[in-house]
Image (cartoon, rainbow, N blue to C red):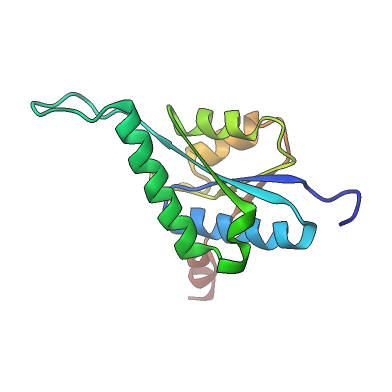
Length: 150
């Protein structure tokens, strides 16, 4: 590993194709630099309904399990030991930035599953670029390449 290599990479994952591309990019970069990866995702308490709501602990457990499955389905098995999971309740951008505090690099997809899916860069990615305390890599998903080729 060289002196300029990142030691801890945070990859924001929401299950969208661009976030999976970001996770793959982070894994490739981590392999090249011998870094660890923290895959991070956020959850929020849904609006109140007429039926019993899950507790914060139940939401966190369900989100952690979903993130684990996403990581297992995206990251090569040999690279799984270098990936840690982090989930927290709150606004996605704030959870990502809190997790990235002290990291050497933050990797995000260019857009996620939010309402501004057609934006050139998603609102969460833009917020991270504008407010992160570490370098940020914005990874375009595979659909960006196919759109240019059409």
